[in-house]
Image (tube, rainbow, N blue to C red; front, side, top):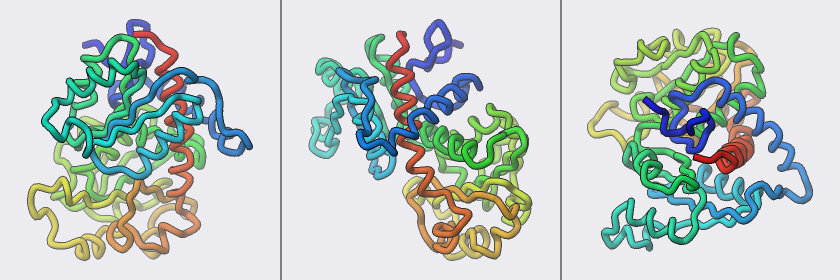
Length: 317
C-alpha cells in the first residue's frame, strides 16, 4: 500500500507517524534540524523558508510544549501562524472536523498542525486536503506523536551519537502512550538493537514482539545497563478502568529515583516527553539532576519542528 505520508517520488508531504518512514527520511529530518538549532542562538531568530505560507494550529486537546514550539517554529520560518481557539470555534456548535478543515482551507491554509483525541484524525484530514496542503500530526489519541518521537531521536543522537550501539528503556504507561509508539518505530528504524518497554502488566501492551522490543515487568531488569531511560507519565485521562491501585504504588515499583537510576549506565541520559508528574513516574531530583536532558528536549523540539515544516513545504504531492 502507498504510504499516505509520501508522494510518488518517496518524498515527505505529510508527517502522520514515524511508522513506515524509511531511515533516510528520518535521518534527513534530524540532519536538517541540526542546521536549525543554531537559529536559537542568533540575535535575529528568523529564516525566510516559509515566508508567505499560512500555518494553522488545530489543537483539539490541551498542550503546552507541543503547541508553543510549533508556533515558535513556524514563526521562525517566517510563516503566518493562526491558532484556532477550538472552544470558541464552530466545532463547539457541531461543525464536523472535515467541514472545519474545508473552511480553513478556503482561507488559504498551507499547513495544518493537528492534535486530536481520536486516533487517525490527521490521516482523515490528509486524505481530504488539496494536493498543495500538508498535515502534521501533533498527537492523535493513543496512536502517534511523530514530532515528539523525532525530537527524542534528535536528543538521543546529540548525546549518544550512534543508535546502533545503544540500549534504550521506555518506562511507564506504554499502553496509552502515543510517544512510546513513535519512539519505538523510530528507534528500530534507526538501528537501535536493544529497545525495552518497562512497566506493570496492566500498562504494557501484550502484542509488542513483532516490533522487536523486549518487555520487562521489573524496573531493575528493564533499565539495567541502559544508555537512555525515557520516563512516561501515567495517562489517567485515557484509562478506561482502574489499571493501577494508585500512583503511589506505581512510584514504589517503577518510579525513577536516584538510587534506581544507578542500575543504568553511569553516563545514561534521562528523558521525559512532559508534562512531568514529579514524585510519580520520576523524582524531582532526577528531573533536575545532572543526567536529565528534559529541558534540552524542549529546545531541540523547536528545531525538529522547523525541519519537518520546511521539508514538507518544499515537496509537492
